[in-house]
Image (cartoon, rainbow, N blue to C red; front, top):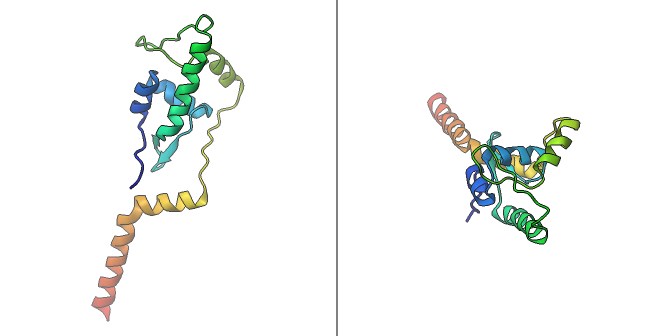
Length: 131
């Protein structure tokens, strides 16, 4: 059975940050993400658990040093938000997603299986018609 990947909204709720913050952290490479169909971001639960434990371990060790950052809706965001924003301004915009060739091929067949099957059926029908 395939593992269930988390959506942006689920990760935002789980980490108690905004969806925009999740997207920004993905762009910076702080949160590992997977693109499905070229545009939909998905996340593995165990990787998000590791990030969440790092954030909360840091906050527990030094609660007096960490000021909670709040987004526009008043929800807490990642504690390194200001520093990351400054770094982001200095670095060129890059996105890094590690996809192996096998994963790209598997995704191609997964998302295009209907078209491949349709072409096969059309080929068989054309063969039967012009035989």
